[in-house]
Image (cartoon, rainbow over all chains, first blue to last red; front, side, top):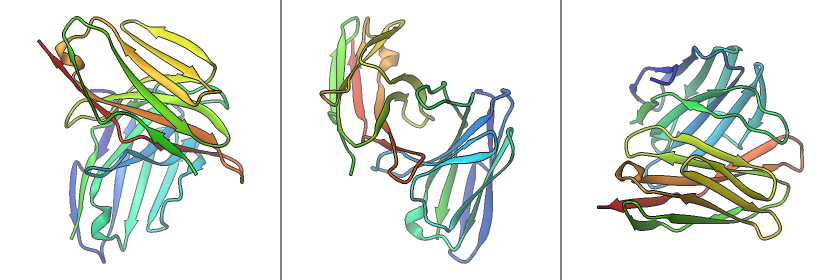
Length: 116
Length: 113
C-alpha cells in the first residue's frame, strides 16, 4: 500500500464509450503523474501536474484528457479510444519537483484497460 | 530525437555485484531516472541523477556521465528479491518549453542462487 489508490482496477470499454480513470493520493504530495504501460513497449510518461498545473504532456493524443482539480486527485478522461490504447495506466504522486531535482514518486496499482 | 539503450536481460548470482548500463542520446538533457519494476507490479523509483558522478543509496548506486551520455545502476550484495526489470529514463527540455521524459525498454535482471 503506497498511499496512492486508483479506480477502477480493471475496465473494459468499447471504442465509442466515454469513461474516466480516477487516482487519489493520501500522502500530502503536490505533483501527480499519468503513465501508460503497454505489453512489450517501454513505459510512457503521459502527463505531469505540479500544484494542479500541467507541466508535461508527452505528445499524448487528444482522446486522453487529464484533469487535476486539486493536489490529491487526478483523472484521465477517455473517449473514442482505439484497441491499441489497451494497456495498464499507472498514476503516481510526489512532492513537486524543480528544474534540476526530482522527488521520489509513489505509484498506484494501476488500471488495466481493455478497449474492444 | 531521443534514443535510450540498455541491455535486454542480465543474469547474476546471489551475493554478487551487477552493473546495468544505459546510454542515451538527447538534446536538452535535464536528468536521468532509474526505476525498479517487479513483474505484475508498479515501478518503484530508485534514483534521479542530474550531475556527473556516483550517488549511493544503500545497496544501490547510480552513476552519470553527461559528456558521454552514459549512466549505470550498480547493485551490490544481490538478493533474490532483486530479480526485476530496471528502467532507465531520460528527462529533457523541450525546444518549445517544458520537459519530456522518455523510457528505455528496461533490463530484466535474473538473480540465481
